[in-house]
Length: 235
Image (tube, rainbow, N blue to C red; front, side, top):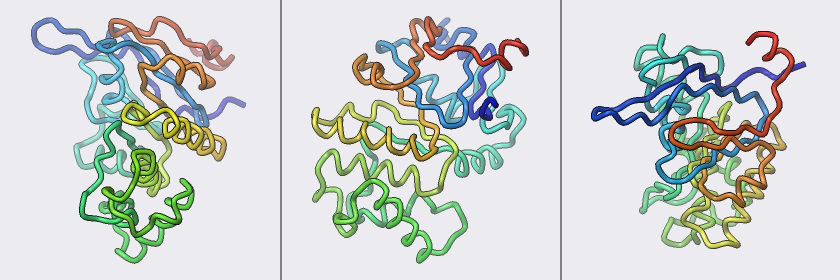
């Protein structure tokens, strides 16, 4: 049985004034439980894809469905709710609050979830344990290594139990050893059921993931995942 789609893009385009076409008729389906690399050089459309998949931006034309919801049919408030419930983000440069310890930085990921501060902190500690940072609960970002900061950022993305984790160049600001730890962690999280898309320009990272979607000039030029029979029948 084919897993449920988490992301569905159909003929998605994104254009900007001046004739810039960042996405050109993109068709992509990511199913529950997949671990996918979206790979390509700078300017290929990867960042635009991240923003569209994360509902941070809407396509110019085409359809985007996240967790079964047609993004174009949602109001701004419902779109924000969809994002808060279903999508976790990890960025290259961490975006941690300087004066707050690891627990509170992670707890901030639940600010709009309607739970008490005590519950947010309890769930934050659980998320930090998942990324093997139990010994860093009370440390502020200035007391953490780059790899530890990224693991805090991953815990913050996971604390709301999202359907989808989007990681934008998650090892880009890290040394090789720290980057390997972060990628190992993403593999572990995927093995426990989290659907993950890693946006990267690094061919070695892409090669280490089960599925590779290659971008060039706003188009998908290759996709290593075979088509499911149900997709073929519906095409």
